[in-house]
Amino acid sequence: MKTISTAIALALGFSVVMAHAADAIPRQQVDQALHDRLPAEIRQAGKMISVNNGSFPPYEIVEGPNAMTGASADLAEALGQLLGIKIEHTTVSGLSGVLAGIKSGRYQLAIGPIGDYPDRQEKNDFIDFVQEFVVFAVQKGNPAQINGLEDTCGKRIAVMAAGSAEQVIRKQSAVCTAAGKPAVIVQSFTDQPSSILAVRSKRSDAFFSSQAPLIYFVDQAHGQLELTGKGKKNGFGDIFQGSVVPKDSALGKVVLDGYKALFANGTYAAIMKKWKLDGNMITQPGIDLAKGTAK
Image (tube, rainbow, N blue to C red):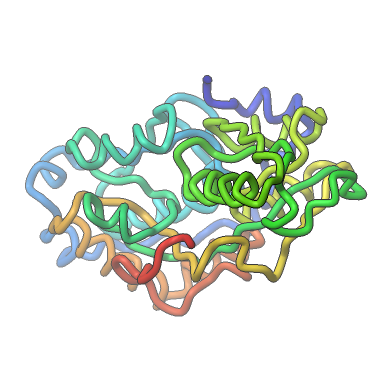
């Protein structure tokens, strides 16, 4: 399945630009000490490649093969300025492709944010910069009456392929069948807009995913959608999300210190507020903050 482009997003009725020129993020001064700590190949190239697996608004809004806007694009721009390099973007299909590409060294970074879980920490490091919650986007009026994970038996639930929500919903399906109830009909998609379109077109009863992008999509759906399951664990513990780098790499420590600088100078807060992500902010970034896995 191809990445949903800006043109398609507009055709679906989504507003790709949420912020105004007045919300521009101040340019960063190069921190020479951080630049000098970058791996030699990145310093010599003057750039590194950040990989994504398609649009994940309002963090990542893919506008072309190497073009992206959104909160994460702003963060990458600020980080690149601070490190004195350019951070370029590229898109692959599926989260598994992102993580495999980071592990193999094909890409240096996935700006994300991507869900941090202990099983993923075995092969990659996460520089966490947001906290997230997992809820349901449903049709207005919630005709399928999905108010939490326990209500999904026999329902058509859209999820991101290979993501943590897919793992949780498949476990719930097993719980349903063990109790003599119909299995969950799991519908896996490679990007957020396709999943939301499935709900809007009534091919799915709900989209089970991160709250931040779902708030964005519900806001852009002009009254066709609403959120349910808010305030519940929905199969998860505390969820941290962040950028992904190779395991135990020198780059990870540089990115962490870069993020600390952007937190300290107010740039992180400015970016998060610009994209209406105030509720997902954390006080300090950290490496592999997740201590528990999905239940």
